[in-house]
Length: 97
Image (cartoon, rainbow, N blue to C red):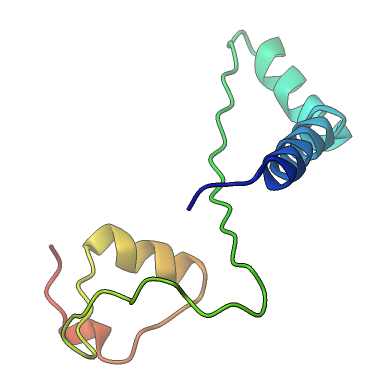
């Protein structure tokens, strides 16, 4: 999907707002200062996935076809879901990859 110039600018504004929010966050600044005071350098990299879907429009490309109900989870996937307090029915029976 190509972004039009307006959406590109709106996305850039969102990135700037997120960056400023983190930069101006007192709890984050204090935590980073504590780490630096302990003698460490801090490298903070955050990843965000942002999706766009034009309201009122049907999807232009069909979803990929797969086996209905088939879900392949790695042990890392399962741990992550559990950390979010999300359980998957029957996940105990799924083999970890």
